[in-house]
Amino acid sequence: MTSSLPGQRAGSPAGPRDLERAVAECRNRTARHLEGRVDAHGVFQDGCASRIVESVLFLGLLRKQTSEEWFRHEREQEQEQVIGYLRRACSGTGWQPMLARAALGMAVESDRALAAAFLESFTHFTGVRKRALLQTVFALCALAPYDPRIAALDAPRPGHAATWTRLVLLAMRTLHACATGGAARVPPAEHAELRRRLVSGTRKVWEGNLLVHLLALHALHALDPGAPEVRAGIRAVASCQNPDGGLPFTDSHDLFLTAKAGLALIRAGRSHALVARMAGRVAAGQNPDGGWPYASQVQQCDADSTAVCLEFLRATGSGRYATHIAAGQAHLRSLAGVDGGFPTYRPGNPSEAEMTAGALIALSPGPTASDPLPVVRPAADWLLDQQSADGTWPRSWTISESSVIERAVHALTRLPAALAAALPARRVEQALRHAARRLTDTQNSDGGWGQVPGTASGTVSTARALMGLARLDHLPGARRAADRGVAWLAAARLADGSYPGPPDQVGPRPVPYEFPALAGIYALTALATWRAPARCGPSSDELRTLHE
Image (tube, helix red, strand yellow):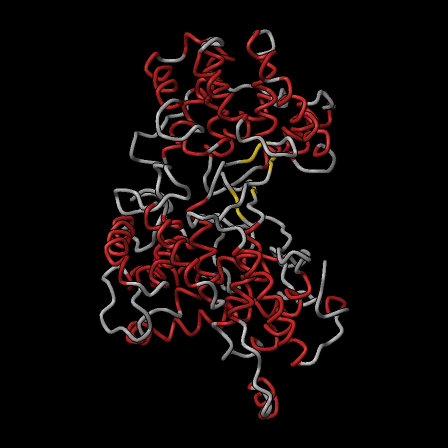
């Protein structure tokens, strides 16, 4: 790591002018690094890091094909590469290294006991389906038994869940049915649907989701080992193999990342022409229903990607995208639940705090507006109701609690002033005070923030905390915490202007995955929103201390 503030992470203070210069230098270097990742078409380029679970499933699928002549000619190199990745990844604790050991034939009896204990204790708000997914992966690695109860799980009707939810459930049902009662237990219609879905769409990997694609290939192989769709599917997955030999969770987040990077560059005052090209690419990626998926040519839109793309297009200040913005907002409004909150994918799915906050940011006309959209008031009420007494909101698609706090704070500070004042008992101000207290109370001694209190400081968790504090700097302690935090962030930058992890996103929940450049995107946003304190007199915190 390079640092413009030697010793800062060890706790030595830097003067305000030194800090201001360090932040400016860091902001410029990080902005140049991000600008260099935008291609001639306006697409922000970044690849998803390898992950053990997909790599294990890929290796298992390759091994099932070793008797095929075509495999020996085409796939031996990929197999050796993924084995090398798993050998490097198999040490350590946790269920994914345990999978790697099993795939390499290194599992011991204690690993099977640990797998059983993990499944027995696993809880998540997505419930039975997520546990069944993990048990299926464990079963494919011979760490857990196949279960006829999973073969009997109901698959959601088309249109009632995310597109990949139905396919992964069909794959799980097929695998457990074949293992516990034979292929005859799989209804012909489900067999046909597996085949049809694996070759539908315009992407090589189905909906860009390697985990679901691999599980579906394993299921189809169980029904028909020689199916041409299995061979084609293996070739598609192999095309996504990373240089380290591992496989990622998804092959692209190009729309989501381009919008996120564009927002960061706008806030840093950078590259007007480049940002305009990025905006054109994001606008072109809008689906016919008005929403945005996370990547080009993915059919399934989601509230998070739609909200971020809308936020970016609005921030360009160009009336050129008024039609896109109107269609995107209409799509978001169609997702609103009867409780006022917003789900991730489909109307009627459970509302989530992070999605609701993003929708509010994209739909709220801002503090000076007098006529908010009808969905804004119930969404604000729902979001306020979700805050815990400790100032946090439930996490869903992120690991860091500061990530959801920042999103909620952003949403609540964008509410029209008349609406905020009309909410009972100054609820918005109370919620913001609780959020500020949580952020200031959980700051680490080195100035950064961990993903949860008590963990080591990380880039994304620190950047998101700083982004939240930038909207709360009128509250006690926020200014001082922000100055300490931005010093940590400036010291964490790498020599090329990028930032290290750890990953903050999860998918499927709660399994982490990483697009490495996202840390730098959030870091630039935080650096751009930090304002150097005025030194013409005592700070507001210092004055407050004097009065107290």
